[in-house]
Length: 437
Image (cartoon, rainbow, N blue to C red):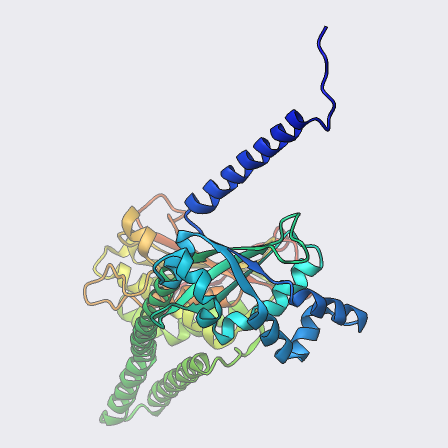
């Protein structure tokens, strides 16, 4: 028969001591080999200060912030009781023994002291740990960025055993600073590129109406220079020159508004009337190219919501692109079709030509700045169109033409003016304009 020893017998006490020693050994191994800088500090001087703040009915952190001298006092009275080799390396001293002898005070900075109120408040409130990032100073005086965690073990004995684990994040912060500098340089490059694009945009957009104005002005001069001046035709040419010059001025004003971040002049826009007006502005070029134009729209099309000048510039760009696509082609392919329609979400405007079309690569890049399929083209028109349409809450896409022939079809979708949405199946489509004269 076995005799069970009493729980207070010496063998049990010896087993408990052995288990405790084994646990202590494991903890010491982790302490020394974790790779983290770990030290143990006596923070007991800070605990009565936290209790005083609570007696005064104050938040611990706020109380310390109102009493910075108490923060410095708590920091000065804290002292190290243990440290590992990684902690010694972090602060740039020869060994943990040197660190324990000299204390941590010489390594503190104003920033590290200012992190203490939040840590005191967190662990006093019962948080299992408190994290902070701050700057210490090494033995050589160099700053070291540290991310550290403070924890109270169960046997902290009134904050006399406070554990701090720290990681040197100086290389990470330096890398982040380098990244920020690179980002700043990239942003500067982007601003320079944007200015180049803006200059190209101005040249591209303003050149069209100015060229038309010059052409009409010269035509007017020729009508007046005839042996029998044709005043009516000269007047018409000069009116067209004035109209194009005013359009150029409006474009410049719009671009200036964009650089000032001015709000667009948004309101209801009659797309059918806008299309007719835009075709009238381009009439001379269309007639010279012998381009047939079909404009199709519902008889009672609700207005779109947008800036009239900007939307006219989109349509003019699409018309002139179609005109260029048709140059040199047989008569049956020199066609431009503009179709307006209602959609469930608003309205659509489609511009279709019978030109050579776009290959898959060009179709994928057609809206990129400076991309052009035309020799000498600036590649800004469609990029500008996309920016304008998207700023209106709309979308623009390129697709194959409806007719079974080469060409390209650009579709612009725009929101309808508030209160004007209607069933897209209502109202038949009628031919508003059959051909450019």
